[in-house]
Image (cartoon, rainbow, N blue to C red; front, top):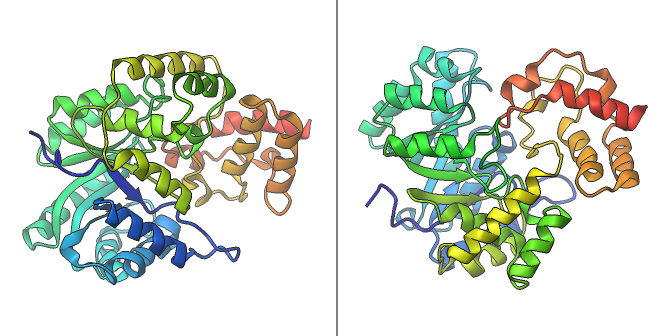
Amino acid sequence: MYFGESTPKLGFGLMRLPKEPSGKIDMEQTKKMVDLFMEAGMTYFDTAYVYDNGASEQAAKAALVERYPRESYTLATKLCVWKDAQDEQAARQQFYTSLERTGAGYFDYYLLHALQAGNYKKYEEYRIWDFVKEQKEKGLIKHWGFSFHATPEILDEILTKHPDAEFVQLQLNYADWEHPEVAARANYEVARKHGKSIVVMEPVKGGLLANPPKPVREILDKANQNASYASWAIRYAASLDGILTVLSGMSNLEQMKDNLSYMQAFSPLDKQEQEVIQSVQEAMNNIKSIPCTACRYCMAGCPQQIPIPEIFAARNKQLVWEQLEKGKEAYDKAVADAGKASECMECGRCEKVCPQQIKVIEHLKECKTAFEG
């Protein structure tokens, strides 16, 4: 037994909720998605103070908290020191703001958000570790942990210093398992060495594995034409040992229905399916791409307001799917009212907050050459 073993293995990530043409969250569709999720016996909902500038937490209140008994679901949210946290008091205020936005009364899971090389010591400086423990003692937090985007060495350092953290949220997917910068396998092994349960984020790599490159699609189609590409990715993550739940940032009813079709009665990948994934990993290793998941953290501090995720998505159309013209069209559209790749000042702010550890400046230079000549 491990902490969270009985928790349903599909979690509803509220980071990429459906949007109306105006850009606001489509609350009617979101409510229908919540209803399907709850009817299927799922319970884990995940949001954060920073998601959609607070709209995600507000959506959790309207679609979930105000419509279901508090004991029927679990809610996770997060505190981050790199947004609206100019000092210790401002950082701690995020917790109370999240309580107000969600109306949840307490949080079942509370996380220190996106610890990485450039910020993890700030959580120590602001005494956030002590703060969350105090809130647990008050009953305002049931369980606490942190989400992580850095090296195995830093993860080992943090877990050694804070052995009472109950779980870790890690980016785990078959594409990043041996990725030298994401270090998914190595981070997973460190967390398990410390006996920590794991919440999986980005199992579909920001949606990229729901529509993988052609060589991958061919392998998966041959193995099982009836299984969605996303199902392979989510079941892969959920099949690992020590998993509390696997978050899926679902953006429409169709994605919800597909995920529930194989996760409501989840069965781990069998030996033959594991071999299929190994073949897929070998195929992906031969494809060059920019590993951007469009989390948009890079955009908050960009002085030139360069639409980095959109530019990288345009470049990946060329690199992965060989869509040269569509890539150029996507680039032109992305920079029509924003900064171009050539306008990068190389200040490095984007690289400091990138969860994928992408060499953004280097890739923007590549995109400048590809799209601007």
